[in-house]
Length: 257
Ligand SMILES: [Zn+2]
Image (cartoon, rainbow, N blue to C red; front, side, top):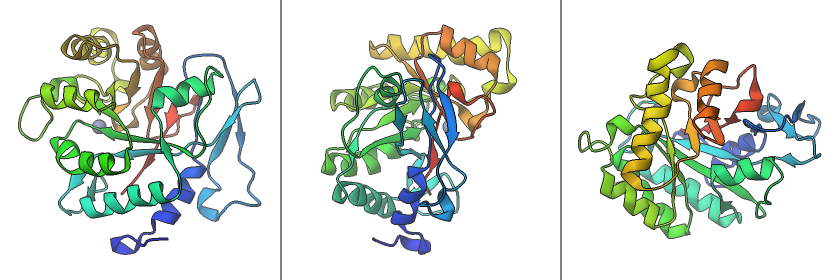
């Protein structure tokens, strides 16, 4: 398995993702069971495996990326060459990229996933995701879900503009919402919460001419109130980087860095 700079191994990262877990969202209640531990590496033992009421069990790596580019010390940045090595690993090991919505539908028993599925996700709408990550995704025919902060779109050269986002869509990538101003929705209520969730969704849909059905919680900030607003707004899946006490409303992602 190829070693990444800084001593990390993509193999270890991907083993860790296998324990990652997906949790049904906004729909019929599945049960969540602790993953069997005997045959799992230590890194995986804190994970869970979802078992839906239909006995459906899914282990799907859902990878979360932010900034792709120059190397600097931040858990939210990954060097382009490291990202390339990770995508190369996925391709060499037969992974097929699916959308978060596809994972959610599979959890509901509404569809089946291809062998070796992986969901690749990007948060925040950085322009470097288009400049640096997109060519690598194209090389492997991988598609990804891009969670955009509506208020950041076209704000500066650091963030994607509307045309770049439409370009992603034309190439088959998927678009999700990451609020209006990248706010911790778990601490909000009332009109402020609705602006971050409902208004952001509406503006994104109007700007792109699509229906946006998947949501990403900034900072992993979650609350039952926010979950209800997200559901009522028409989202059918939501991803979170922090495992929550009420896990049925989210799909948990693994941060890659
Ligand atoms: Zn974010």
